[in-house]
Image 1 (cartoon, rainbow, N blue to C red):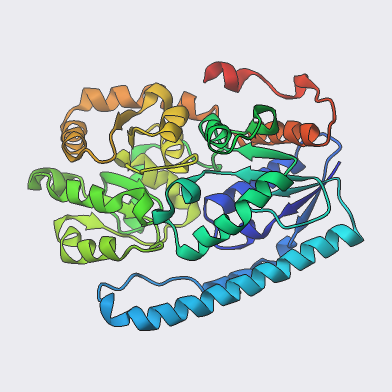
Image 2 (image 1 turned 180 degrees about the horizontal axis):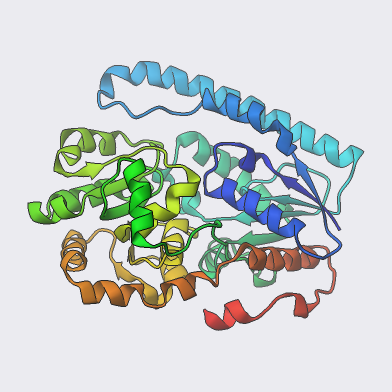
Length: 404
């Protein structure tokens, strides 16, 4: 079985899709099955691609947005043209590779597949661009509007990160149930409970406080971080002094409002933006947090809550389908627009040690159900379905389904 995989997401500065692509391919290659992965672009292209992407990466949003609108608009047009040229070039290279070398199946890990003459399987991580276009750049929305329907008709099979997204795909687009396989994701290695003195020593190296509330993820409207900062800044001073709010993540699209509130208010109320934190130190950051706060409006999976649970931590999350499916009864849930509920929850978790202990019970065990090996096994089974091969059910353990 020869699978051509679009490896581009793994070669950029990695977001969730990039981590998914890299981790899944590594796990697939470790399976003892007749499987050959053809990764294209080749991993050796990584320095070139990262160098090119760095020139297109947005900088920290400017608070003085109005004065720069004309310049930003022109820059955006140029960047979009470059992206379109790159996309067309890769489209040609993929089609040419299939013609020259061939493959049994093409797997697109990032929503929209290239147009190739081969059976195609695509991973649909979420439907936020379709359901909530206001949370995405116009060029991305336009790309989905132009190409998503074609992808639905051209793909032999689909993967989703969760059953929640699978059901959305069925209800929104009438995709047959048998054409979709839910393949819950895994978590990165090295995430586990640490001795607190060891974790705090790492925090000292990073010049971070010893305890705090934590959010990890890109700063953008979908993550609901303006709301979170407003709720946090309304807490009593004694709470904010004991537990700063640590926002770990880069600036994303359309974050001008978040940037303005941070500059004018939040940074004066103990909200901290530490910037990039090395991968090998993330476990310590999770371990020392009083709680992970995940107030997103929408997620397709959401790595931080399950990563926090892997470190034995407490999770306060928005009541949305992805969080409830991933965390189950281990987290506490709140409406992502209910400021009073979130404020009361932060006050309670700050002082109630018994509540804190109860939220941490079973967290590590729940997180252990999410592994890249299991994701790879489920994906291999989906490859077999897409190619009309009778799958050996023994390859896919039932442990995950039974536990969930």
